[in-house]
Amino acid sequence: MKLYLSSYKIGDDPQKLKNLLPENCKAIYISNALDFARPQSQKKHEDWDLGELEQLGIESEHLDLRDYFGQQDKLVSKLQNIDLFYLSGGNVFDLRLAMKLSGFDEILKSFKSTNKIYAGYSAAGCVLSPTLKGYDIVDEPHLKTYGQHETIWVGLNLIDWMFAPHFQSDHPDSEDINKEIAYYQEHGLKYKTLRDGEVIIL
Image (cartoon, rainbow, N blue to C red; front, side):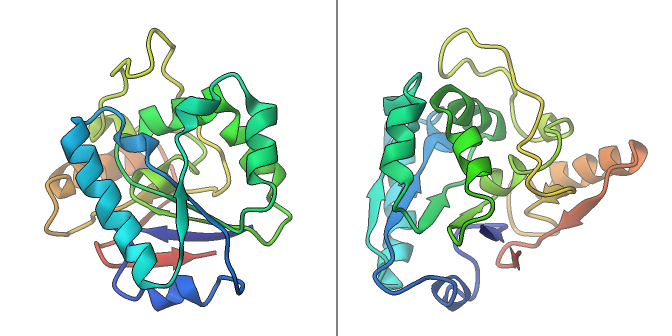
């Protein structure tokens, strides 16, 4: 599986994502990291993201992981023939929990040896880290967006370092990112910083 991890939105050079995709790419867009937001705000971000993909000629189906809570087998069937998973930013802990409740976390891991592409920005990259500890400096870990569930502190471990977006950027989280980095340094955690516009491809 290929990873396209952006600090903010699709990044400064969207063609880099386009170059990873097969012809007639089948894409899914997931915005559950924004479920905590007001509907109007969430829709604004969703329209932006889908618009960026459309400009690249990528037609995406908007998939809500909440529709698959407790139905992992159904979600597996849905995703088997998908080439691109594109995920929005938002709250790291909500996204991680939505992945767990739908089984999307285990499904992603099962796709590691495939040519599928996992792409997204901010929280979408953070959940791939080994742990989510430190992300609570920026994101609220106990929103209860999906009801009374325990906060998950274990990341997907698809990367072996902490993903630190919005570094030294004109973004409201940038100041807290510096505190997050200090936490990583204090606890001996490997990390990589990205400024808004920058992308890491793995």
